[in-house]
Amino acid sequence: MRYIILIIFVFFAFAEVNAQDLASYIQEAEKNNPEIQAFELRYNIAEEKVNEADWLPNTEIGVGYFVSEPETRTGAQRARFSVKQMLPWFGTISARENYASSMAEAQFVDIAIAKRKLSLSVSQSYYKLYAISAKQGILDENIELLETYERLALTSVEVGKASAVDVLRLQIRQNELIQEKEVLEQDYLAEQALFNNLLNRDENIAVEVVKQMIIPEEDVFILTDNLQLNPELIKYDKLYESIEEAELLNQKESAPNIGFGLDYVPVSERPDMNFSDNGKDIVMPMVSISIPIFNNKYKSVTKQNELKQLEIKSQKEERLNNLETRLAQAIYNRNTMRIKFNVQTDNLKQANDAEEILIKNYETGTIDFNDVLDVQELQLRFQINLIESNRGYYTEYAIINYLTK
Image (cartoon, rainbow, N blue to C red; front, side, top):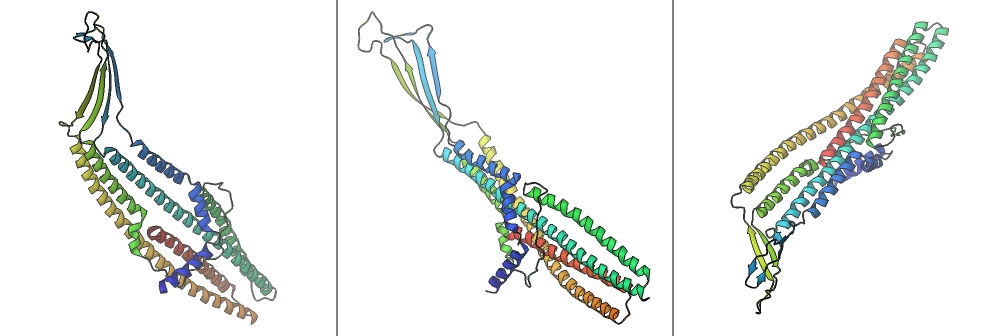
């Protein structure tokens, strides 16, 4: 029950994060992304190969004409017509279809992998847009705050409690923040173009992001066993199964092929004789068998399949190790971001307290604008760090979802 409550809480937390409907952005990306479309076409081709597997060798039809008609007891043979059809061993066609179907399933897993990667990329880009936008908002607030301090400094200069240098320093600081904001505007446009390209749409379309992101008080319990269900690992299982089907097909193809045929020879009547079979045509049914006696091809293919299965096992084990490392790193980074968020929250509170003290000092007629600038820089740094902690937390959570969802 505790985990269910946590999941519900994080669901609503993510709902606030995704107020601009990040899910719909991801759906749009999956629908329009050329890479996904290419994978779907590959899957359609692989599915069609199942129909292609249902085939028989070409029917052989032969026609021959005797230039010099051979004489037989019943008459002269004029021509020869033949038809022949070879048939694979029992179950060969089904084995072909099963192999083609297993390859199609492997292609289908590629679609799932591509969609997960695309979803992760869209989420990461969205969170970057949030961070840039939030930083712009923080800079606006700090610029307004500095303007307030500037007015206080001007008033203090008039009564002789501050110098013009204090005013200039406040103005210089404002100019620096305005510059940072303009740079962030360019960063936002660049990231917005990347985001729109992921959705395969015009890169100049405006992307609206949420104003605030909330880190939940507790993290959702992560089922690390779900890592085994990641499509990147399932892909190796499907490939292993396809090799098994390939070996079954190889065994079927190594069996004899059976052929059935029919020869027809028209015979002319002998005019000088009168008997019951005079001019009787020849009809000869035939059965043939093709046996790969001196062919080591199938033994070699069996050995290759065994080696491929060993290779796939090693590849899966190596990929599992990489995913486990990546998951552990993502969990560590997420926890680190939570710690940073908590520390920066406390620091910001103390900086705000210092600001209140400075304001009270101004009311009593004693204010040091050097302290004002120092506190303002601290506030800005802590606010920026809070935004980065938020972005980092949800970025790492997106990676965790990619690995264990």
